[in-house]
Each structure stands twice: as C-alpha cells, then as structure tokens.
Length: 372
Image (spheres, rainbow, N blue to C red):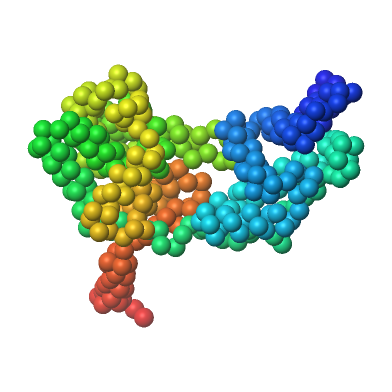
C-alpha cells in the first residue's frame, strides 16, 4: 500500500477525481495500463518484462477493437486462432501471450484497485476475466519445442564451419573488405557452439568476458567465459553463469579474432566482442540471416537453426562422456530434465553404448572363477 493507503495501480492514483474525462475510453485504458505498470514495478518485475506484457495487451486490444470493459472470451478465441493460423505462433508463445491478458484482467477485476467501480461509473459495465482454463493453451508438456528442431550431426557441423571459413577466403580473394564480417560470423558461430550459447548470449559478449581457469592453464586467457545475458526467468534480470572452456580449438579461434581481425572492424574501439559494420554490436537479424544463408547453401535441413548449435554442444558433450551434471551447469539449466530434452544423441552413440554394455556383460559371464 502507498502512503495514502491505496494499492499501487489503483484507479484513484491514475485518474484525477472530480475532473471530467475528455476522451473517457482512451484515458481510462491508458490509466489502467499505467496502474498495471506500477503494480508490476511494486512486485519488483524487470522493466523489460513489463514492457513486453503491456505490448501484448495493446496488441490484443487492437485485434479485439474493444476496450477492456467490453472484452469477452470470444475475443480471446479469435485472437488466439489468428496468432496460430496466420502468424504461426508456437505453442509456448501463444500460452505466454494469453497469460499476459489473463494477468491484466486479474489486475482490473481485483477490488483492491477500484477499476470495476470506475468503469461502472463511466461506462455502465466493467472488466471481467476472459482467459480461462477452457479457452487457453495448457502447459501440458515440459518439452514444447517443435519436434523437427534438432542438433547438427558431426559431419553437418563440420561442413557448416568449413563453408563459413570458405566464405572468408572467397571474399578476401576478391580483394573486398567484406571478409572482415565474414570472418566475424565464422568465429561467432564456432564460439556459440564451443560454449553452448543462445543467440542473445552470443551477441552480448564483451571482450572482458573471458578469463583464466586455474585448473585449465593450457587454455591461457580463454579458460572461462562469463555469460552475463543468460535467459531470464519471468520478471527477473538476465541470469549469469560461467562456462568453462572444454575444447582446445576454442581459444585459438577467439585469440585470432580478437588480436588479428577484430581491430580492422569500424567499431572495434567499443567493448563488444562482435561489432557490426554499422553498429557497435551485431544484430540478431544478421545472425539469423547469415546462418540461414550458409545452411541453405549447403542444402542442410531447414529445421536447423542458430539454437541447433547449442543443442549440438549439449549432445556432443554427452556423447564424449562428460558428466551430465557438468553439462547441465555449463549450459545454465536449473533441471537435468531440461538438459535431457536438448540432448539428441546419435544412433551411432547409442549403438556403441549398447555394445560396451553387452561386451561387459559377456566378459563378466566368461570370467574364470565366476559362480552362478
């Protein structure tokens, strides 16, 4: 409660008592959003999360072409159908969007904030909850990703990296300066795979995020990578983690990029590890478009995406015999079950594992002195 005894976001804090509203619909709606924003700030939710919530509610209002006190479950049905059929939203995105509208309606219908009374006074009706269990996407499975998404096979990954390197040589051979961003993209993709990073985690790396690992002196100055923009939980700041270098080739690529190539970039004076030709940090759209261009040029499966590099990192560590708990900590998963979802071990790996188990069983059965 505030000093005047009113809850953050209450109608009386957002609307001036006694003054007529010139545009009641618009003014009340904006006051509602401001009140909801204040309520979320009071809950210590992050500004970025609050902005996303508000953006979703505004989008829903535009689609419904109605104000919150006029919304009905039918509006939710039509909006959801449009998101899935026209815009191609995946299940988890649709559920999150519906969740934003549900939270907004919960806020408006809460008597502590006074919006029901305010709407009755101005419009003769009031907002109600319109997102229910029977018209919202259910969170029925922990793994909601599209089933076609997968990791690279090792030959596919090798071909992808080789092709990225070839583009550097091709452009440089023509005497064009475009080889610098081509080199950056090749090094960036390898770094994303080498540390199991998401797109934003990769993009937001700075030069100062690398450090030594006392237990791995052979990696020099690149024994650890401090990820500062890990995937956040709802309303929380980005989750940080430190990833240990596991492959000897990773520091070589990083060192070559930082010391020999990056200084030639236009924005190399900034802290970003991956500067762009036009900005101080490469954009996400650039990462997606370059990745897709390389993938399609090789005729690889369209289901492969930037995130497949992270899936490949997890899969290949497991196949190489690393402890699953170590892998889980490397990629920043709270639960081992999440890491298991990402793991796409090859049929060859499963066959080798089975063969080892069978051989061990036969060896034990034939061991001299064994008693039944």
